[in-house]
Image (cartoon, rainbow, N blue to C red; front, side, top):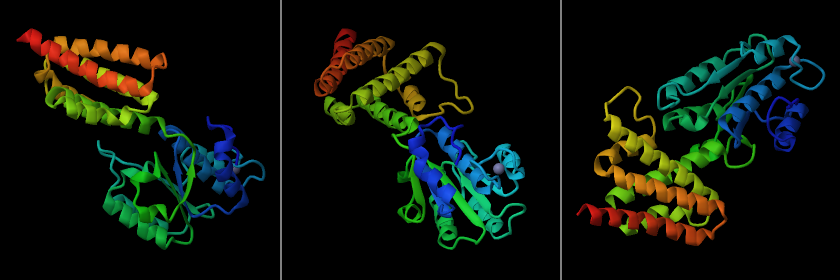
Length: 302
Ligand SMILES: [Zn+2]
């Protein structure tokens, strides 16, 4: 398979590429890792390569199938992704795939269904998907993508051949940092020091995670400060993520001076993390300094 257009080392695409070239690729494939964009590119490229009738590196880019598939216009390639704000893929969409999969291909030798970010399938949708994977129609092939296989039912995972493009994906790292940052923010404004230590426990041994969490938390504090300045008006689509929702909760209950002080402390911690300070000490310092800031401010305000 010609993978030059994908910004990823060839090593990571080696297994997938070899199976496509050999014609032995499983009828159900899951592509995980890297980034959402790269997973989508790899899924589309794989579909193109599978339908290509050129004789060199596939997709050749020249044959009729390639011309259509590379423009996303091939009638035998169907793409499915989440639609609403929650991006969930509903059972109805999967049932539609099932119907279409039973019909013979239009032009190619097979029909390919790409399910982008398959972890967004509801449980019902996943169960419907499972039925198709268990008894795949003769001409149908399925390419699923997901940040990691964890979001999929075990029964689905066992039915697909997984190709991991390596590294925890950037977005799953970011989601992780976001969740921890929100837990910490919650503990900071409404919990005890013990709650804070618990919330910060996951960052103990991961310098990069400490930095990412500092960034996320700083984002929350700054958003809360902005809300204090301009006031909160409920608007369509806001808050659009967990961090913004946390900022909305914070802006009423935490004074601007404390938010500023916390922001300053976080930038110091991020600086220390950059200077390779000991990770365990760093996370202890993280909790104690943020708590001290809070106690200090409460004392001043009283
Ligand atoms: Zn071709």
